[in-house]
Amino acid sequence: MKAGIHPDYVECKIICSSCGSEVETHATTSEMRVDLCSQCHPFYTGKKRIVDRAGRVDKFNQRRAAANKPAKEEKTEA
Image (cartoon, rainbow, N blue to C red; front, side):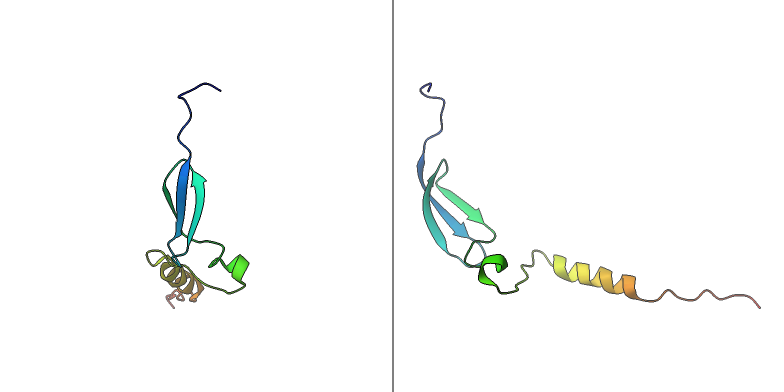
C-alpha cells in the first residue's frame, strides 16, 4: 500500500437519533448519527412504530383522505 493516501482509522461512536443508544466501533470518522438502529427498528423489535419527520405521515394521510372523498356530482342543466 502507498503511504499517506489512506484516511485515519479511529474509534467511532454511532448514536441513534430515535432511541439514543450508542455503539462503539472503528471507522474513518469519530462520530456517526443514524435515524434507526437495531434496538428501535421495527424489523428487529417486532413492534410497529412510525417515525415521523416533519409531519410527512400527516401530510400523506390528508392526501389519502382527500383522494378517497367522492367527487362532487356535476350539475346538469335540465
